[in-house]
Amino acid sequence: MTKYTGISWPDLSLSHFELYVQDVNRMQGFYTNCLGFVVTDQGRGSGGMVFLSRNPDEHHQLVLNPRPSRHDSESPLDHISFRVSRLDDVRNFHRALFSYPDISVDAVSHGTTWSLYFRDPEGNRMEIFCDTPWHVNQPCKFTIDLALEDGELYEYTEQQIRDLPGFKPLDEWRQSHIKTMTSSEP
Image 1 (cartoon, rainbow, N blue to C red):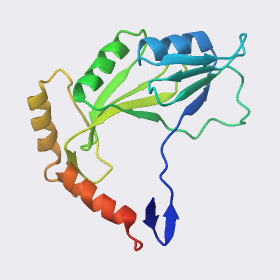
Image 2 (image 1 turned 60 degrees about the horizontal axis):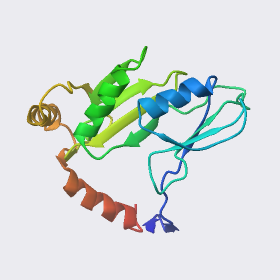
Image 3 (image 1 turned 120 degrees about the vertical axis):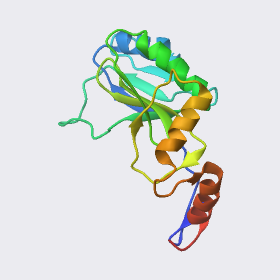
Image 4 (image 1 turned 180 degrees about the vertical axis):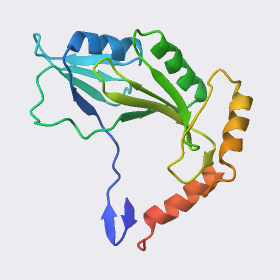
């Protein structure tokens, strides 16, 4: 439970996203081959939804829906973000994404993360990231080279952010953040 401005909020975790897709087979291939998702369930026929997950505790984290959107305008969703635990995981996805035809990948840091931004075959914007060992106030964004050795990338990232507002070790920021989230005062 977290408490903020007098309201006790229950813990909340992200469960899944559902995307309207035009070519469910192509999208399923992309998410299984490039991002390592597993099909956990599937509807019948060409209009059947596909349920995918990478988490053994979640039946699905992503649903591909081949039916037309019921919305009159484009989705306001900017991107879907997936956290991984290690920089090597980000690099593995980077390699997988570059092996897929017509996928453009941007490798950036927000100071707090090392991130990949890309669009799936139907234009949905995605991010895969891992945390850096630092915090810095946002927004912050600069290009990174994932071909650098770990030590070089750590050094480069820290050089880019050490003089920015809010710079501190991540653990120090987390302790402060926990206090803010559990405080009854804003």
